[in-house]
Length: 276
Image 1 (cartoon, one colour):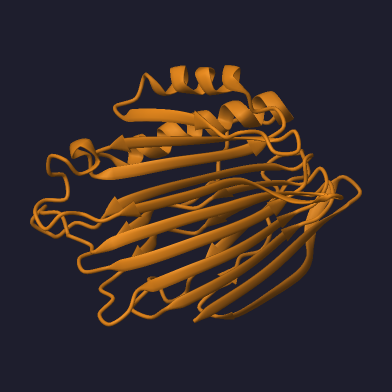
Image 2 (cartoon, rainbow, N blue to C red):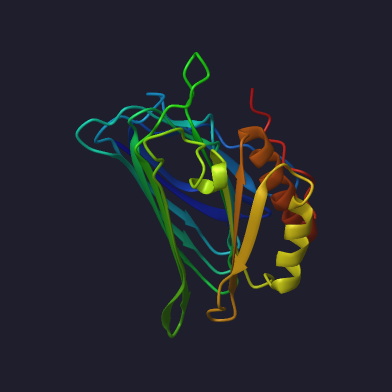
C-alpha cells in the first residue's frame, strides 16, 4: 500500500509544493527546476522497487491556477507475479485555470504472471494543459524469452470543468492481454511487443498539430496512429498510440513529440531529466 498527495501552487515566477504527504511505498525526491521557466519537477520513488499481488497505490495530484508541474518516476515501474489478485494504481488529477501538468513516468514493465490495473482520473479547466506519456513493455528472462504477463489495463477518464458543470472529454480504455503463446505472436498488437501512448489535452490541439506529430513519428521504427477527441468546452484532446519492439525507440518517439510541444507552446528546450 502506498499513498502520495502533492499540491502545487505558484509563488512569484516559480511553482512549488504547497502540500506534500506520503505514506507507505511512495516518496518524492526534492524538487528540481530544469530550466528558468519556473516549472517544478518532482520525481516519484517506490522504495520497494516493484508492485506485487494485491498492492494498491493511490496518488492525488493537484496543480493550482497558473502553476506548472513535471511529474516523473525515478525508474521503471515493475510489476512482478500477482498470484491471487492484481496490483493497482489509482491516480486523481485536478488542474486549475492556466495550470499545466506533464506526466512522464518511466516505462511500465510487466513480468511473467503479472496482472496490473491503472486508472487515472483527470479534471481540468478549459485553459489547463495536460501531457501524459506511457510505455508498456514485457519483462525478459535471462535466456531472452519473453515473460508472458497476464494482463495490463490502463484507463484514463478526462473531464473538462466549467462554471456550468463538468463535461466528459475522453474515456480511454486500454486492455493488453497477451496470448498463451509468444508475446510478439501474430495477431497480438500486430506482432509488436511494446506499446507507447501520448495523451494531450489543450485548447491548441487541432488536426494540424495531429498531422505534424504523425509526420514526426514517421522516422521511427514503430507503427503509430493518432486520433482526436470531440472538443468539450473549447478544449480538444489528442491520443497517440505507437507499437514497437523497443522501449528506447518508443521513448525517443514520445520525447520528440513532447519536446515539440514544450518548445512551441512554452519556449522550453528538449527535456533532460538527468537520470542516472
